[in-house]
Every structure is written in C-alpha cells, then in structure tokens.
Amino acid sequence: MSNITTFTKGLLKENPVFVLLLGMCPTLGVTTTAFNGLGMGLATTFVLVMSNLVISLIKGGIPDKVRIPSFVVVIASFVTVVELAMQAYLPSLFESLGLFIPLIVVNCLVLGRAEAFASKNKALSSVVDGLGMGIGFSLALTILGAARELLGSGLMFGLKIFDNSFGMLVFVLAPGAFFVLGYLILIVNRINK
Amino acid sequence: MAKKESSFKNMVIALFVISAVASTTLGFVYEFTKEPIAQARLSKKLNAIKMVVPPFDNDPNADMYTLPVDGGEALEAYPAKMGEELVGVAIRTYTMNGFSGLVRLMVGLSPSGDITGISVLEHKETPGLGTHMSDEWFIAQFISKNPGKNNIAVKKDGGEVDAITAATISSRAFTDAVQRAYNAYKNSADAESGATVIKQDTTQLSKGGNYE
Image (cartoon, rainbow over all chains, first blue to last red; front, top):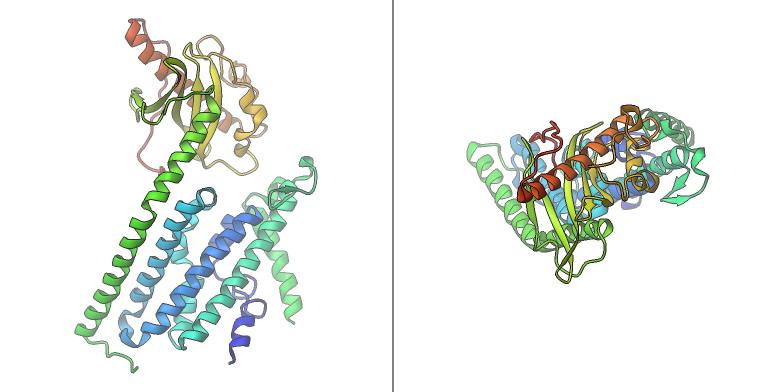
C-alpha cells in the first residue's frame, strides 16, 4: 500500500468514527461544540502520530508477550505530555475537555492503530497512518460538534448563526449525540458505497 | 530487527527500559510546564477576583487568608485594598449540591457584606441547563444584595431569586454557595466583634469529585 492510500483511507473509507466506530466515548462525550470536537481531535492526532512513530521504531525490541503493556506505557506518556501542555498553554480548552484528555489512553483507536498497523509497518508509513486516522477523527468530531452546536444552541464555533430561541436542547444532551452520529454514519456509508 | 523471544529476561528488560525512558521524559516535561501551569492558574484566579470586587491596588493573592466553615473545607478569602482601605473581599466558595456535585464560585463582598460580584469558577452542570448559571441576568440578581438582610434563596423556596428555567437544582446550589461565602465572612467578622452566628448550613465537601 502506498503512503498516499495509507493516508487517505483514514479520511473517508476507513474513517475511525463513521466506519470503524472506534473511540466512541470521547466522540459522544465532548462534541457539544465544534471547538471542543476539534481540540479533542487534534490532541488525539498528536498522540496517534507520536505513539505510532515510537512503537514502529521499538517494535523489534519488544517481546510479543509484553507488547500490549509496552504500547500502553508509550501511549500514556504522550497523553500526559498533551495534558500538561494543554494545562499550561490552553487552560480554557483543558477545562472544557476535562476528564476526556487522560481518557485518550484508553481510546481504542490509539491502541488499535498501534496493534494493527504500527507494530507491523515501518516508521514512515506508521506516521502517515497515524496522521490520516487522526485527521479523519478530528474531521468527524468537528463535524459532529458543529452539527450539535448549530442545532442545539444556534451557534457555530461560538459565533451566532441563529437566534437563541432556535436551539433544540436535546442535541446538546447525550441523546442528540446519538441522533447526529447516526445520520452522519448514514451519509458516509452512502458516499462510500 | 528480528523479534525478541518472549523469555523472562527479555520481557523484564523491555518493560524496564520503556518505563525508565517514559518516566524520565515525563519528568522533564513536568519541570518544563510547571511554571506556565502555575501562571495560568494564578492569572485565572486574579481575573476572577478582578471581576467580583471594586478596583484595588494590592496583591490579593499575597494577602490571602482562610475562613473556617463548619464541617468542611475552609474557604479562601482574598482581600482587595485601595491604598490602606479595604474595598472588598473575594471569597472562593463552593457547594456540593449542584446537579452533578461540586460547584465553585468566586463571590465578591463589600466590607459590610453586600454582594459586589460573582464569577463561576468550576462546575459540571448539564450543558444548556445548569450552565446558564454563568449568564449575566442570573448573576445580576445577586448584585448589591446583602444575604444578611435579603433572602437569596430561589423564589420556589420563598426567596428573591428567579431560578434558571429547568435548572432549579443548579440555581439552589448557586445560592447555597453564595450563602456559605457570606456566612463564613460574617462569622469571622463577628468573631472579632463578639456577636453571634446567624445561620449555619450543612453541606459538606466530600473528598471525591474534585479535579484540581
């Protein structure tokens, strides 16, 4: 597989949210606004790219039986780096994402790519895979967040689009996440056919 | 590179090396971000203080003192002074009665106990419902009221405050936190002048659920 297809498959054909249905917990949890979705997506992208890179470099030195604990330590380290950096330089974003940042460690998307791709491929294509998957994840979360923000409170990235009275509260709450995700999966499946 | 065999020695070495490298790296990152994180927290706190008390020229953070509360975490009080005169006190208060537990507020009181401003520091209320507690109209209801003279409970409970639609519990929690700040401030002021305590409230801050 060439690097270009490795990259583009994460965007649509194997989109982690809409097609693989990985990482549903942050997907449904943080996407109350487009900005939250984008922030979460970019944080996950960083972790994905870095852990894919490191894991593909050290895979030869790790005995098979301890590969999962080793991967988790690598992933957890990068998540902690993101958490500390975000607390230091983007405190308001950190506040709204809160508990979901440390939870990137258990996002099955990250461990899934480490196990399924990075542990079998070279460094460069692992980075490209992480980048593609990460951008696909960010795109999905941003679209989901934007749709919920628009329908729920009439805003888009915090800017007023519709009047306040337009908002349908259900889209900001948990059930709205499922509604919007369902329709988006429908659309993406339609495109992929 | 060929795969290492899963012998006991190899597994121990691999895990040891990975953990050692990871913890060293994290140690460096922690040292590097320690200062900016403390800075970000401090500026957030100072901004909240500025929002709730009249203009001041001292450093409230350096003059911080604590107000004891019955059966709970002591509240931090930040006195704001202009020259030598005390113009107000910002009190970092909390309640556990929010719809999802902890709500933290910064409440500004004038020396006589009138509310000069309130800023929401931290909460986990439902987006679109309880989050309206940061709205201007809701907070404006409290400004220049004195919890000693005015009843700052929600109207449902016989008070003077319009609750947020569909978020009575969050509104109640909000008034509870404000009342707590006032009580703690009044108690310590009265302790100095020898008067008696006005009103006690019973909520306690449990250890859990506080991510700070």
